[in-house]
Amino acid sequence: MRGYLSVFRLRLSIGLQYRGAALAGICTQFFWGFLIIMVFEAFYSQTLTEPPISLTQLITYVWLQQAFLSFIALWFRDNELFQLITSGNIAYELCRPSDIYSLWYAKLLAQRLSSAILRCIPVISVACFLPQPYRLPLPADLSTLMLFVVTLLLGLLILVSISMLIYISTFVTMSSAGSLLMFGVLGEFLAGMIIPVPLMPSWLQSIVNVLPFRLCADLPFRVYSGHITNIEALTLIPLQLLWLSALVGIGKYTISKALRKIVVQGG
Image 1 (cartoon, rainbow, N blue to C red):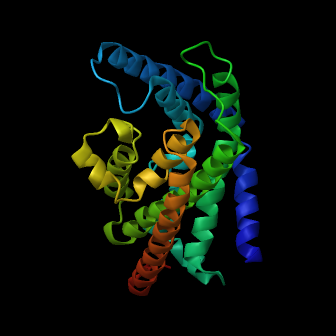
Image 2 (image 1 turned 45 degrees about the vertical axis):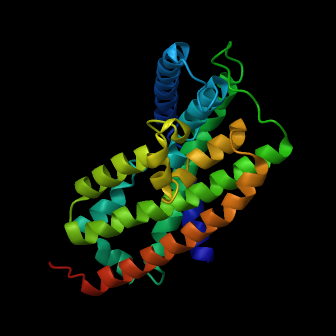
Image 3 (image 1 turned 45 degrees about the horizontal axis):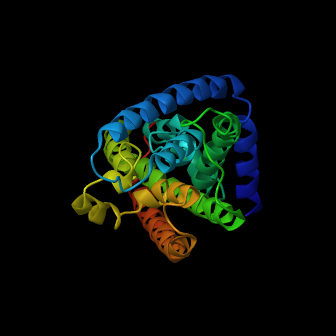
């Protein structure tokens, strides 16, 4: 366990050095945030019926998406792991006296955390002082804030577990492009990052609700905005734990099967 924590701390400190890239990302996220909010603002101004989520809650949803993008984006990847698999350097990883699934999990977790630490504080700090209707409101009370943090961190663990399946699939396909495209596009849509889940048709919501993607982004953001009550959030936390256990179990099983069949050629 001490070895995995050392890897986690090392990768976290490396990730915190990329401040220039984080600054460019913050500018891009503000641009996209304003663009998406203005599109929804125009949509809401023309609607004739009461929307299932208010404009203020939707703006909160969008700013949290931008602030915690590295927590919820499946296309956020570690190219070093893909190169290890496709180049054959995975042999060096197999020589280490550690569980490769846990080692990679710690690396990916630290990578996403370091990116979020650099970006979320500036985005949230500025968004809280923007003029209306673009301002990010504070959560209703302390219990809502605590539930938001718990659901967000559990969502991060679920997302890293899903990301691990992308890397494991590369053992079979030997190309990351297909898995990244499939998981990235589908996962982003089903997590509510293109259209917020409350605005989806009811038949599509019934499909989205049984999949784990919305538990990474939609659930914590709706908890923060008050669209999901604290009592409802408490009932959904066991579902997050269940999905986390299932995805980690599937990941450990599939990587053990892939490693048994691996053949490394060359001198």
